[in-house]
Amino acid sequence: MKTLPSPVLGALKPEYGSERAQNGEPVAPAVSVRGVTKAYGQGERRVVALDGLQLDVARGEFVCVVGASGCGKTTMLNLVAGLDTPSAGGMSVDGRVALMFQEAALLPWRTAGGNVELALRMRGVRSRAERKRVALDLLGAVHLDEFASRQPHQLSGGMRQRVALARAFAQDADILLMDEPFGALDAMTRDLLHHELEQLWLDRGFTVVFVTHNVREAVRLADRVVLLSSRPGRIVETFDVALPRPRRIESPEVSSLAGHVTDRLREEVRRHAGDA
Image (cartoon, rainbow, N blue to C red; front, side):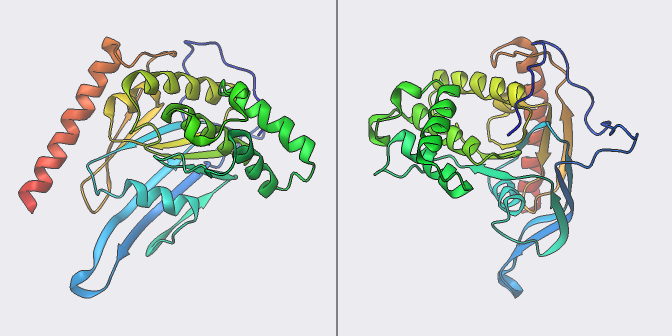
């Protein structure tokens, strides 16, 4: 992954969707979802998870997707990652993709460094010495280089998620898909990982699509928050987060916007309950 210089903290990023190449042509989005529908089963048992979903994510953008349980957030990530195929519509993904889950899913018989080295080996890095060096560098980026020789069971939940993050970077991904990666962590650990993820994103310039149930987390991290309807998932509204970085999850500005998004989410949940 190409390392980009860090922007000045507190500076607002440009409006997404307005990027232009040197020749003046619009830059293609990193992720483009065009009228995607995903259904499971047939006949009376058919369940539509997503219906006509439309979404563009610009290169370098940090998008958080929120919605009620069962609205199709994880289904959308699986489609973008290529783990499943749409029933209708299409999508394009411009770049290499890495996927992070709520659980770190580390191999228990490998050390922290060994888990990262395995991703490098699968990427095609043949030199063992080079894999070890790069793995240590990546673990250093998440402040875990001193724990490279530890087994996963010797690490805390937050540390295991940091290893999973380093493993994702080892895939040299341009697009990082994150499925509630911090949902099982305590508030303090989650806050620390928010900061580390934000700094790595600012430094390296990759694209993030981050699924969460936590609206404050979404506003804390995102350039843009996308709200999905209850099943079948459709985009109900998007919220631009024009707040300077770094942000704090407990700040009045984050709380105010999160409250607005939450109110809109509650309206959607009530509407769905009334239709049931």
